[in-house]
Length: 607
Image (cartoon, rainbow, N blue to C red; front, side):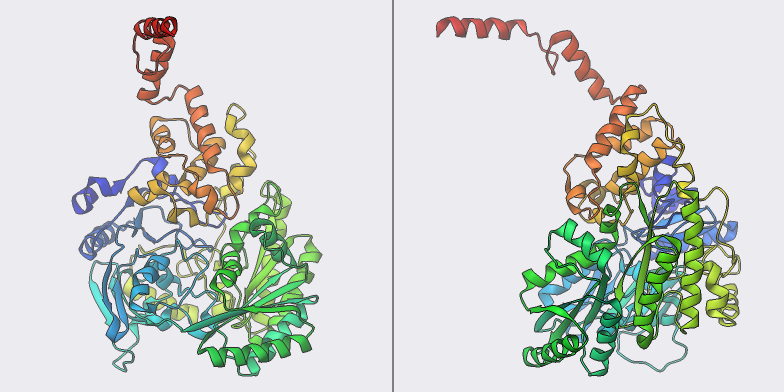
């Protein structure tokens, strides 16, 4: 029936395709039963009406860049991939708004707005891959939230399909309204549990005329935290204020060859606006940082210079995969938000917890708005390390709540934050459950998330790394085990993979192929014609490897997987024909070589 709604080409049921949608950047794995690509609101409405009648779970997916398991199909059922709803429908420059479909990628939207002298301010680290719909679903923000706020502050209205297929529109394309409940904000941040967003009206603003970035190094992390508080209290209106610890500095030096000095902390502050006022604020920042022990203080208004540090910051998370061979980065307990005055103490406590458990923790984040990201780097094959991860997570969350913070500042709750939903939200969780019950009584929309229908996170058999020790020794891929697990599944390769951008299907892209290699290597997938087809959909152009901050050797992995499949008897018919021609005729095209040899001999005699 789904083929009748969206067309046969927009429905995938083969396990090779489905497994590529079973994971995001978390260590969990849930397989969908079917994958559907809608192309219109009408199609989404029909799909949800059918699913609701039959009580089939529906999980909406953007680019799959979630770090909290928000897009994992915990109830199986349908994955609704919005990648083909990617139109910028209207740009109203004179009214400062734009209308888009949910599958529009953030960077692509800003490219469309650039000739109009406009931009959409929320700026995530995954901007080259993440979709506007996904940003709305999680109320994403990023580095520039300090000045420009979060996604919800830039959404004027939505078109949403409810669980029973009804379509509702919220908001208006005007900048303020006092007409009833703010239903727009109800759906923003609801992580696809209340409805499916099919259209967004966004507020946009003119590009700032001048930008500059200040960088400062500190030998004591607490002093960097104090400096950030002092800068804010001095009335400096920074666009962004970012922090990285010594571990992060080490990694970006290796990946980007920036030549940054060794330090315990790096803070960089972006300012934008009128040139005169920006330069006055740079003087204030410099003076404050010097008083707090800052060194190597530099600033630049050259885009080529400041974009280097911002590129490093945006790709930092995936770059951390290079820190230790065979180790992976996990986002458990990551993304807490603190009152600004508590940031310095929180960073200090993170370090103590790291030392207590012997777990490597890289800390970075947006000190200007109190949003910190302490991420753990562990050996995925060591059960003891996973045990420590849970203990560290508990200490992080306890610290956050003790400091009157929030358990998730910008990534959403998804699956990962469920154990802390009750203590973090209190009685408001009960109110959320009542809203969920009213809009989705059959609980078909993104089940198992946010603590709405279950407050349990762990389920046997749904851990991505549980099979990492079951390596098949009969495959050439075994020597690429560490290379494969180094992939953080961040999705940044989606922007540069020509095959993915033609098909919009994960199994055709670089991230999907690395995941398929992992499933093949660990025996979760058997060699098949469909798997061969997926690996043959690669030109070995190396764009993904160039893009990948972790430097995953995707082309080598693909070539080795093809070799493994060939050794198991799975060879493309064209390749078989070529091999036969070479063996029989010593010619790729199966030509009789005798006439050419005779011609060559005669030419040789003639000369």
